[in-house]
Amino acid sequence: MVQRVTALRLSPDGTWLAAAVQSAAGDPASYVTSIWRIDPEPAGRPPVRLTRSAEGEGAPEFLPDGAVLFVSGRPDPVAAKQKSDAAQDKPGLWLLPAAGGDARRIAAPAGGVAGVSAARQSGAFAYAVPHLPAAASADEDARLRRARTDAGVSAILHESGRVRYWDHDLGPDEIRLLAAALEPGSAPDPADADQAATSARDLTPAPGRALDEQHFELTPDGSAVVTGWSVPEPDAGWRDEVAVIDVVTGARRVLLTAEGADFSSPRISPDGRLVAALRYEHDSYQRPGDGTLVVVPLSDAGTGTGEGAGTGTGEGAGTGEGAGTGQGAARDLLPGFDRQPTGMAWAPDSGSVYFTADDQGRRPVFRVGVTGGDPVRVTTDDGAYDNLCVSPDGSTLYALRSAIDEPPAPVRIGHHR
Image (cartoon, rainbow, N blue to C red; front, top):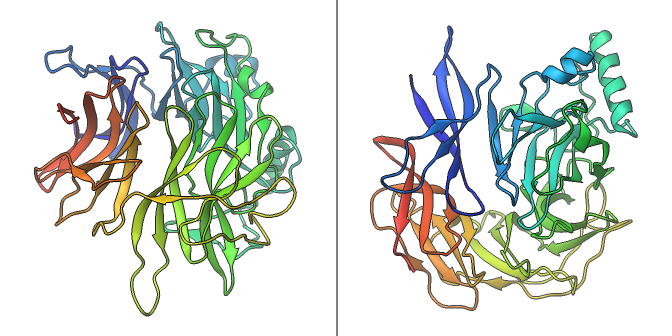
């Protein structure tokens, strides 16, 4: 059986890794993803498979008590028994209790679940949901989808400049962010398959195409979501900003923005004070755009920019009801660094950032302090690293390592401080 690891997450106490593992099986063969438990100690126990279904499971995220949230299209036995599974063909959000036992589905929106993020210090979580623009509620979204199916409609009415992303069409639904919470250590009532969904709040009721292919994270206390946000530019162009959305009020403000540049992959520091993000200039006829890593305070003092402030208008822009901007200071952590960063992870003390960058056909790991200084190379071999996870005490780094002759595999990088 051919297997490869596609995602890696470290438990809050640092005692085990949750890995999304793809296996080729069936006839004709296709990849099915499952979640495995990996002991990070060199002489630890062998990996254990935690989930199993024909539909597969992926996108593992830890809650503070060690429970695991994941996304899966597997059928829910409780909902099937009640004949109430309106989202039976779409992936739902599931919870695997920390103490063990069967996983339970806690959210099943009609459009499915496209991603999830959990707070470090509370039972709050946020998840991305494809939602039809004309639907005012989750129930109406389910009704409209049934009507499309019953009428045999598969057409997409495009009303914005973005109609496709790489290998798939965009629409007819749009991505929205929903927020909900579970008490740490609690499990939803098995008799209510969608208990968490009943308390979910729609944070982005009219996003347009702003949240397509965007990364988002919850603050450690679960009070806000930091997310990428696309806004239109002149001549049918687009740029990506970073926005902060209040979980209680839904108010949105722009945190990072600049004309002619994209900000992406925001990561919140463990102490909740700073946000790190990748900044890439748009290419021009004069030169290719440069890429770097920036940090900005998360406080609502204003908007951080690399070289000046800017706001957008129109669909998905950083202006309008609930949006706000100001002036702030984003710091470039890599001035003069002749490599483009690709991924990152915060150190537990929030004093430095680990990141990867392509270099001579490899992708080593680097570390840079948030107060300045030159980046330090952590790995010196020929591997390409991804999915960085830092241990709670900061002494060990875990990652997926691949090479020209090796598929991605979990590795331990120690004594790097």
